[in-house]
Length: 80
Image: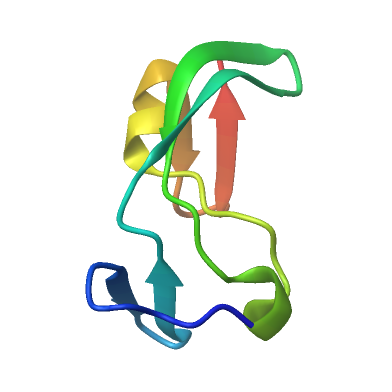
């Protein structure tokens, strides 16, 4: 488990608790999910796999670049 320092960011997510992220964001030169490939995606690194069981969270910045559509009734996200 990662530990936090004073310069790190702590996010509080409802029903999940605290997620510690490193203060310096990283840049991924290319990210591909399914048929969607994007360049220069900023990421915030943190410890979520061990305590929460998932590898990452896609944010609204990714969803905008990937032109995602969210269907909240069906709880689905589709890519154009």
